Length: 114
Length: 115
Image 1 (cartoon, rainbow over the protein chains, first blue to last red):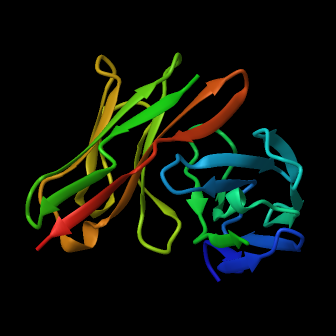
Image 2: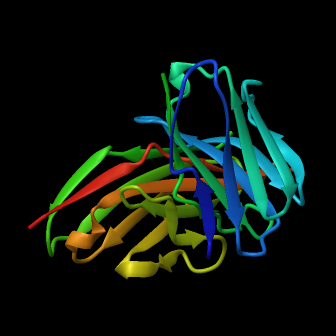
């Protein structure tokens, strides 16, 4: 595997389910990110991790719970989601979290909440 | 606070025609500027970025962009469109404010290339 991978690619869940999204980067980067991409809205930064430590939580509801066990893996745990949470969830990584660093994105998980 | 405005959510050009995608930014400090492209069912891929130095930046696939501070713009161009350029393009700005460095994206411009 190369680059940034995300699993699953598609997920359908009910409002009472609990599920997790997984992201893995094979680039040796130190920073990882979760973004939400909804139709007709700008990409929204959700969380930033740098060297496994959370450095940014962009006022995300607690029904989204991130976990970063090491610099290569990032999870997004989901529970009691709402239909408006349906979106494409993108993971990205960069060498560090400096403003000049290029972010490398995974293909995303398309989430549908029924 | 930083912000990005992309003029035109949809742009349609003929194959071989000039591509011009507009981006204006707002930043109270010197910005770093990026263009990303997203093909269907894929994540975002960096086309080019401006950090410092030369204001005309060349990227992949024949694209380039010019940083114009006086106009707070970073428009993306390509002299001759190809069918494979059909995708969604995102402009983004990043700068250090209060120790927090993060990308702020525009809403995107979907490019259609007609044969």
